[in-house]
Structures are given as C-alpha cells and as structure tokens.
Length: 466
Image (cartoon, rainbow, N blue to C red; front, side):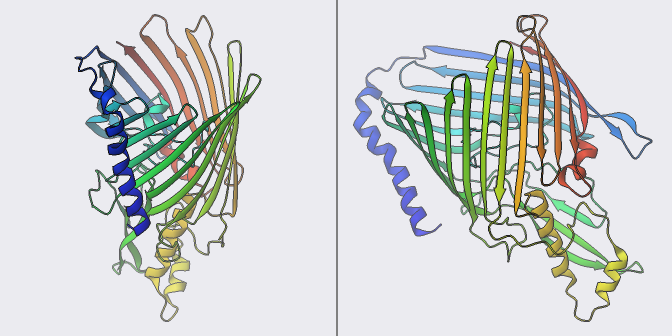
C-alpha cells in the first residue's frame, strides 16, 4: 500500500472514534433491550432446462435446486441493528452437485445522531444506474447465478462501513475491505479443451496485501442528487493469468498445455453519478475512470485503463413501467490485438506448426498473448469504443397477481445479445410461481457465443415466503 493510501486508512480509522466521542451521550443515553426481532424468509424450488447440442439438440435439465432462505433482523429502535441473510441450497448447477450454506449477509450497525458504523458480511452497491454500474467496485457478483431473482447475483463481502451525515444534504461514506472475495465469472462452467486447465478462486484470499478501500460523497440538492466516489484496491472482477506452460511432444504436432489461474489485480476507480427527474421521467447516470496499478503490457490478466459512461431513464404510467439505458466505454491506449484468444477459437494446428518452424520462436510468449487477448474479449476491450443499450418493460396485471416482464441488452460493438422474458404469478398471498427464459447470442467468437451453450435456458420456480 502506498503512503497516500496509508494516510487515508488512518483517517478512516480515526474518524469513527472522533465522531463517536462527540456523540457518545446519545449512544449511551438509553440501554434498552431489543425492541424488535423479526424472522422471515422463503422456501423455493425450481429448475433450468437447456438444449444439448452435442446430442441431437435434445432438451435436458442443466440445473435443479431446493433453496431455503432465512432473514433475521434485531434492533433496539435507538442505536443499533443486526441483520443476517442465510441461504442453503441443495441441488445441481450445470450438472454439478451442490450442497452449500451461504452467509449472504450478517452484520451489525451502530447508529449515532449523524453517523452509523457497520461491520460484517455486507452487500454494498454504489452508483445509480439500473443495469450497468461502472462505479460499483465494493461487492462481487455471481454472474452464473441460477435464480429467478436477479438480486441473488449480488454477493456479500467482509467489510466495515462508516457513514457521516454532517448535514441533511450530505452523506460521506468510507468502506474498508481487509480481504478479497472474487466474483464468479460467467465462463466458469465453460467446457475447456483437454490441454487447458483453469484454477478457480474458491474462498476468501486472506493475504494481508489484499486490502481495499472506498470513499463516497453523496450530495442531495434541490432537484438533483450527485455522488462522487473513489475506489483503491482489488477489483472484484479478476483476470485470467497464464501460470503453467509446457509442450506435449507425444503427438505429431507439439501441443501447448496451459494452466490458467483466476488472478485479482489492483486498480483505482474515480466515479461520478447523478439522479434527477423531469415530470414523471426519472433520469440517472454514471461515469467512471479505471486505471489498474500494474500495466497490461507486462501482465496479461490486467485490463487496460478505460473510461465508462452510462445514462438511463425510467417512466411509469398506470400498470406499466419502462426502464431504458445506454452505456459506452473508451479505451484511451487502445491498440489492436495481434493473436486469437486462447478460449473461444478452434486451435489452428497448421498455423502452430508454421510458428514452431521459425527459429527462436517464443511459444510460451505467444500463448501468453492469447490469454491476454481473451481477457480483452471478456472485458470488452478488443475495440477502442463500445456502445450498448438495454430496456426493461414490466407490468402489474390482475390487481398485482400477474407480473409479466421483458428485459434485453444489446452490445452494438460486440453484437452480444441477452433476452430475458419472464412472468410471475401470485395466486395467493405468499406463493409466487415464476417462469422465464435466458437467451444469450453473439457473433462467432464473442463472449456470449462462447457461453450460450450452457447459459441459454428455460426456468420455472415455485416460492413460498414466510
């Protein structure tokens, strides 16, 4: 951690103590026992079906699950609150057995007159846009979540937050993340060639160097809200590094055998967001400038610096709600890729034989470039500019018992398309029946073209809330 970062962290740790000493009278004024305890949750069962293109396009069940969720809230109504969200899942995901207990969130929050301090497993989401949040770097996501509830993609992180409200128009927030938890990449279930292996991050990385922090200021003005944020630490979306390489000489044409490892990288992100309205139309947006500490020129798993921007609107009328969004990005230091990605293209053994015939050819360096190109593909950095748009249309019918919706996002540059039609039916209080589909499509070699074989699905779920 650099010297400026250490100063910031020192100030973050001292600030709660200073404010606490100024406000300790209000905190200790009443030692009441718990005023409220609530226990609620859900039981859910469902399945995802897909098409097996390797077996005459036969339908099959790719995922089936039985979920139990329990939420607990406790507070004394004055100066503290505790919250826990526990999840247990038993079933199959992408034909792999699953039996896990997750502590999605479990934290304690202490309140003063103009401040609050929280610590534990918590989900922190920054930014105001609906579909894309380039300023949000605190909490990871599970991008292959098999759940009809899109918020289940959000994952908690062990962290501490401190919020100070010096006036009714300002909120200052500091977040400290001592360890690293990785997002689940959308390529995790991808079938790999026999000569390629990927080592995943299956738990917290507790290295003392994996320290991250974020600062955010929200300003609430008449007619418009602004937010300015700074993140310094390890991006929850890691890269892929080449960590092992050798040649298989047992075949006529030597084949490179590669070991890839999901690897975090440290970055800095300066963000700006806003929200306002014009009549019954809500308007919001974000912008972010991301600059990794390590150069992409020396580490294939590190993305290039980039500038992201998002703007969107939402409109409601009667039973209809429509949300639209445009997002874009620019790679200031862009240069075209010179090799194909290591994943997503068929090996060209004839070309490989030609390269091996060149005296002094560095095959390992060539494969490393291929890994770097795949990271650029995954991070949408194969072009200098990218432009995307998304829209969600939903309605409440039959007095709120029937909720059809349609969501789509399209990347005009990569031509990746996502479609999610869905319908929810609530025949009685507490019971929800959900049916929908996820459809991914892209041109040959694009990210969605790589994942569509296992992500395309039709799903059905039954849920009882209690």
